[in-house]
Length: 113
Image (cartoon, rainbow, N blue to C red; front, side):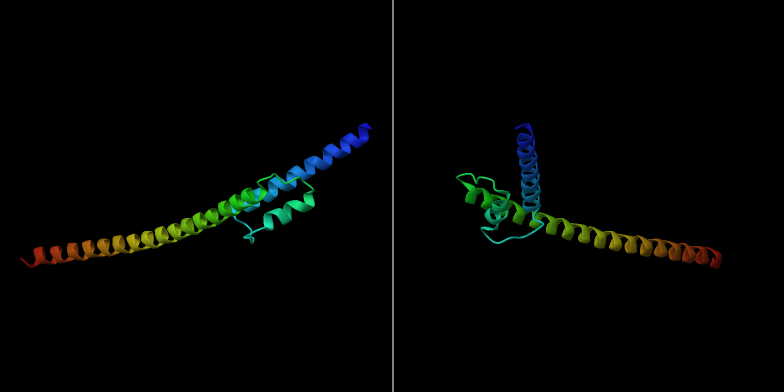
């Protein structure tokens, strides 16, 4: 009987781990899935679905959708920052060149007097 209890506990732990991994994937938005896919992925785990499973699934899917949007915005921000830093570098180089040219012209002007 103890062996059967251990096996049941191991199975439950494995199911819990798979469910957590599934929820983590969906919440991160790693796998965009059609409506109802959440229930289909929980089914093989033989877990009882809570009475509000469809609402929960929709909320998890919405969370994944929002997470994908956040990641896209973060990537756009990163690209814009990289572009702005590149432009800033070019402006600083141009300013330095103009300063050096101005210095050379001032020296010439002083020697010409």
